[in-house]
Image (cartoon, rainbow, N blue to C red):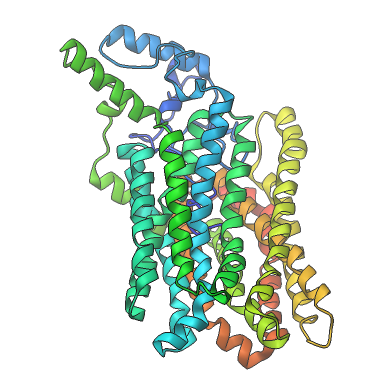
Length: 548
């Protein structure tokens, strides 16, 4: 999926400053908050929690991290090091150990390796959907029960970031990422050899919980070493892998289940892919989180010099459990209740995300049952959704590099509502695709138009998702991390719940009316981005969490 966890996923999470930014009575460099790149934490998406408004104006694209005022930062470092000679920092902007100074070839190797791991994790979320019928027959349970195999994995994607986000702040990127990936691979084994349905359900959830670790961390890893311009391309690669995974799962899984290998090999294949990508990652992916690297440098200097006063900023500003709980648990719920922009955009994103995962159960009904296709052939229409998503990626990239670039060059910053035109376009074509799919599903009509309808559906899903995420980040800059956490919980909850009623709805209402019902819901939410485009600024001014 592009996956529930795309804080998971397709966004970026930025380490919250240990103190809230304070009002300044002067605009001098000395009075500006000092936010250093090495103090930024980025995940999934990684999003800014507490940067200054001046820095935040330079946020240009999903996953972009503030990289302004470098000269001021360097001056501040020099002043602080002069007063505290035991403070360990980078040795100037050209420090070879600074991930920002990696060679471009190495950066791309890391980008591809991390994206590959992300692909495997999201692939696992949907591949089991093709084993629903086979497992229901083997264990003598209903297909509604075996559908839980998909839903529980996505539920793990929803809850996992609550652990992996803080873990990446405490222990850096690499250790949590590969611990999660390793345990994720281990839990594929019980699924593959399960003798009862309970084992499958439990291990699918735990596999999702640990498998989401890369999704929660990779976006931040990319922001650790890519500059603000090239990062947009790297994030596109990462986002592509995130979206391709859940769409590729049913395609590969259906052929595996239909073959002599059987449904158990959906887990074995996931294990093999996870182990292979993990091996590549261990070799090619270093620790890139700046505060962690400086902590390790300080520890090494203490050991070599026996000067126990050497320390890094992370050693000075360690977060306590109370801060973690407030940031990752309480504040997201508070914002979801009190912020109309966050609530409505999250509901919209939850709907489209739920529909995507609902289709993993609905497509086999439409193509396998109604048209009489084989499971393998019936999974190929998912490729049209993938094509639509790739078109959506292209639209976002072109919009960011043309229209938004001109706005930024002219005004020096980007108004959050400027993110919404592509989302509005996606909001229009998404229900069109749903109605198109619904009323070309009759078996007496050739399959071609029904399959093609997946293109506007996929494009609409991606535009609503990516630009909705971008808008949330721009609106709640200081508290974007908490906003994304709330968004992830509700969105992944919908993705876990929608497949549970898909079969009953499509069997009772029929494909045309069941899909039309989804289309009517999508139409009802079309005004959301339009109204925020018109009135968003006014609403933001009344928000206690959006910077004025």
